[in-house]
Image (cartoon, rainbow, N blue to C red):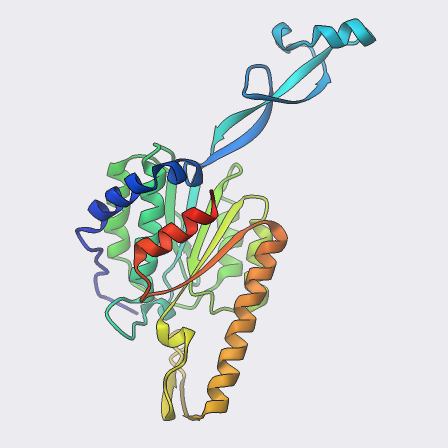
Length: 292
């Protein structure tokens, strides 16, 4: 279990401020939590009609329709409805890996804090909850003060345990009271069936999956006699890494990633894969440009 403090560069939010200004129009529609919902009465655009019910506003009645068919109908409109953003951040042992300076958890934390910051800019509610075998559910709130408190909490998280994404999404799903924007940030090096179940469980919501990998995981660079360690189980494997071994590893990883992508596409969710050597703002720009 990791005892170290996971720090975020003090210049991170100053850079994020400049970055947000550069892409303001994209950000305002991408992560403001904006969602259309259907209501009767005042709104933005007419989307349909339904029969009049006692208690409906008289001004919403379509009198032209009544003149034609002598039945009362009310217009239905789309209006903006703010969504709460729930960010689930993987804090299992495997996220503590780094072949260079930045661990997967530290990179994932910057992504989580960045997404929360963009939501905070529009004064919407967010929560960042960490998970491994279990989930530490945070209460959704709004405001910059809460964001700073959240970042301090994330910096002190002790990593440990195995990724149990199926179980934690079952637990977390019980805490979500309304349709939301859900962002899951993990290495997703879990059983595919568990990941698939989690995706379908949250498919009703606006769902984003962000996979964070170390460059050496994305492209296996070791060769010859090597000791491989499973960070979540501490199991050691002494093996010879041949070219065929690397080819098989790469094939299985790509198949795993493609299966996640295909499942997300089926339910209308978004899926992104980043390695920790990709500049964090390039990752943000990629996600925002996809959500225009």
